[in-house]
Image (cartoon, rainbow, N blue to C red):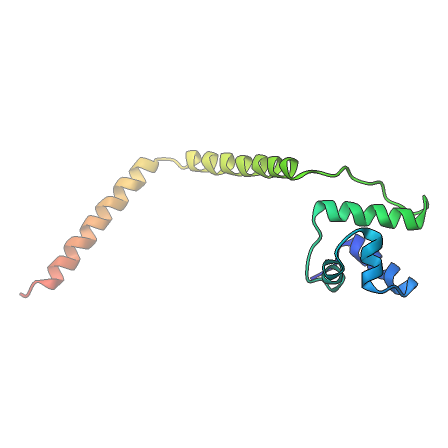
Length: 128
């Protein structure tokens, strides 16, 4: 798994400063086990954790090379955005289904084919 840009920078900072994970985690205000998993690529930070990582990296770099902080999105905002995406996806699926011409005809044909298949199956079960 490819590490996120912020986590790559955090890893470089840790190696440059020869910091133990526990000290790095303390500076970020995160759990040391979690930070270790981020650095190894075993876990992905939440939006809020990424915000804290970016804030930390900006503070140690000063103004040069620092990225602007994206506003922290709380859980409700993230869920609202995901719900909008889900609704748009469902709208598109409904539109695709409505675009199928003669859907009723296809359903009727499928029903007839199923009935014919049942008749053939039943006919083969009877002895001649």
